[in-house]
Length: 234
View (cartoon, rainbow, N blue to C red):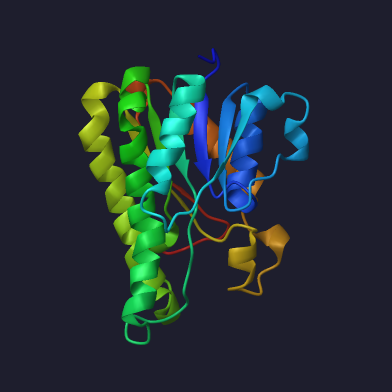
């Protein structure tokens, strides 16, 4: 059993997930990186024993159970889950097809739910298990017509975080919906012409997530909103 705390991070190959993985690793965590094509990051080469790679597929209903079983079998613990993997389909709820809407809900809602469920027992045994769901400010308000379908899925993801917080509170499990606006990732840059330096940086969001999972049980945060611009409300 590893002595350092262990976090599972989905969507860890790039963007927010990659930044979270490096930040936690640098803070002393053992990290299990869920990637479609697992590759050891360069920053992990100094201590590869604290990095575990898993070929995670958010659309595979059995992937989360296999991942959790492999990690607990090898390391004996899971202390945090960062459910970061997500997709967007920029269509209104009228334009989107049933198959596309099902895909949004599968990746953005069902996959993090399955990941939390697969890790639930280990998170409870930790006594201070942490779940971070990457929501979005699109899970707090609908910004535009073409972001509407994505917003439906992210409203559900934020609701899931609250549901998990209630389900695990007595076991010391704390769940937080982290809701950023535009973050300088490939996904965001495909949706806006805003300069990357004017967006929230993945590394800064990773610092927020590191802070949230490091807080004691008595400082539970249900939602944490981060934005690069001023808005009327969200």
